[in-house]
Amino acid sequence: MAIRDQILAAATRVYAEHGFRGATTRRIADAAGVNEVTLFRTFGSKASLIEAALRHTGAIDASAPHALPDVPHDPERELAVWAAAQLANLRTKRSLIRQAMNDFELRPDAAYATQGWDAADAELHRYLERLGEHGFVAWDTSAGDACLSEAAPNTRHEDLHAAAAMFMAALFSDAMGRDMMPRLYPQPAERAPALYVRLFLRAIDCAGSHSAPPSTEAA
Image (cartoon, rainbow, N blue to C red):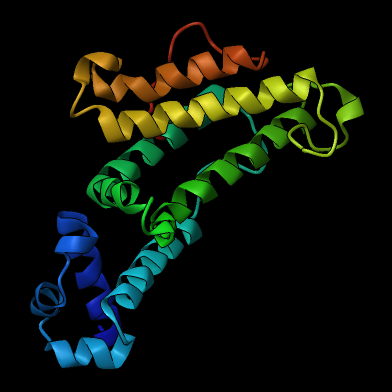
């Protein structure tokens, strides 16, 4: 691993554990197996290093392949598998994201930690458009070609957008809050993604959705 990547990985780990204030250059240098002079020579400052680490981590997540198919066949099963994967990924980065949210008011660049989640949201919206194209979801054609386009707001468009927002919010909240407030979320945890998907598909009147939640295991 190149020294730069080694430092970025170490900075990400230290930041996830200690936040911006606690992620001292000494801690990061020790975790990376280099001296502090190397950190400053490579990144210039602690702030620049943390920003670069969050950008790097977020960019990797954003470029990760997604599982939603180009041609939908079984929306409930496809979305349940996807949602389970998204939840698992969020949980592995829970500490990092929590620290970024805590620091965001004073350090807006902390938002780079959630680039991957932004990419997942964009993929869901593209999948909804494909559901419309293949007849699983109907919307008012006066909204234009894209059911979620902001260019032509109408009630159907707004309902679809709100339902997608609530679905993504449920996944994010589950990943961030289940360990602190387990009674707030469906049990067992493994069943939650399929339950969220079932309610989401009912909300958007998706044709072909089932009455019982499917397995979230990939076929």
